[in-house]
Image (cartoon, rainbow, N blue to C red):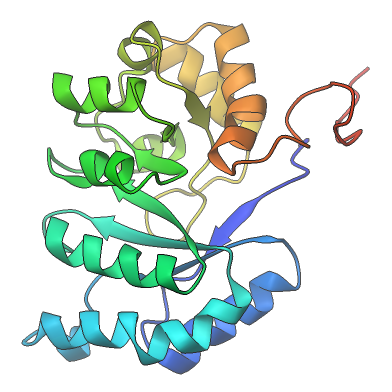
Length: 237
């Protein structure tokens, strides 16, 4: 359906062995691999979240960093708070990984502000935003990546793309394809959802799914037709 570049994450193993295995497999298929050991606190560490953060920033990071370009954290109530997320992302940066953040998907919180503070390439979801969050995104380099496949699959509130675009925020659009909350790999479907339910024009949605997606990966060689970029496109007749 036209997808030529994708970013993929770990996050369903939550052990050193399983996270490293997931990333090793992913790295055989894409250069855009994200270490997400901090998806949730492993149930094995439910009574000691600090010990799990130590694992994610220590032994697990050491095992996973060779296969990844990015590090991500789910900064949300019930997952990781702002201080924990900062520690995880800072440890990843020290290993040469670039930060991304699952931010403000389920509730208001510190995720977006943290993403901008650490110059994360992307703040994913951005469903529950204060005016200060929107201003921070508009004045930083962090891309707001909207993932309507998740809202469609979970019947949740839609992100307000119009608010972000009108404020001058760079917006990307993608699927969030995963077995827990987004049951589609179709970018065209997510473009349609963005136009129907999120206040985007067709031109804005197409740009966000291509050039915006490239910006969320800090890439200039894809997502646009321009001199010096790759001839990376799908032709439809």
